[in-house]
Image 1 (cartoon, helix red, strand yellow):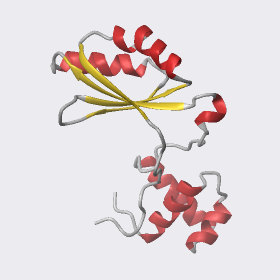
Image 2 (spheres, helix red, strand yellow; image 1 turned 60 degrees about the horizontal axis):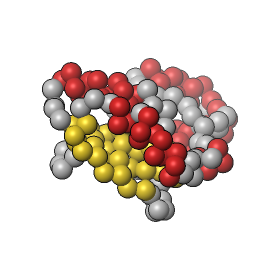
Image 3 (cartoon, rainbow, N blue to C red; image 1 turned 30 degrees about the vertical axis):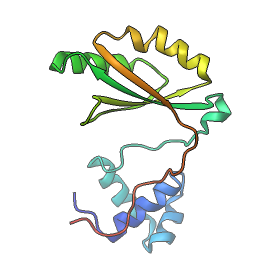
Image 4 (tube, helix red, strand yellow; image 1 turned 180 degrees about the vertical axis):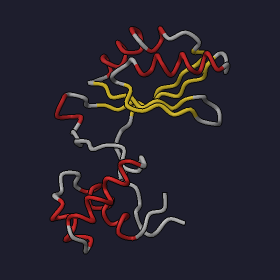
Length: 156
């Protein structure tokens, strides 16, 4: 889908505040409400806008730590990869999982309350997934940057 400057401007407004009103979006991008609505619906239909979310502070819910887990699997068969992904999807603390190139097969971002909570998660859930050959855990000490997508110009 080709996005023009108005589409990108609308996306920027929504990325900054998904609860912005059509009037606010229109004022920010220089369009009236109806063209904004039509563009938003078009981008939703095309899958550019995948949904609307709330940004929740993990610490306010007791999730004080983030752990990045590097995992290597025993096998790289389609079945093993599928089953591993399916098992990760069943663990609520797993926030993101990436199949990657390099020394490990997966990078997994996990939210935990503390080190004991992480040890419990390893023992009761992660290490029960068949096919894990090796894993390495790194506790995040501080997030240096978190940003939204750069929406700078028309896509070619």
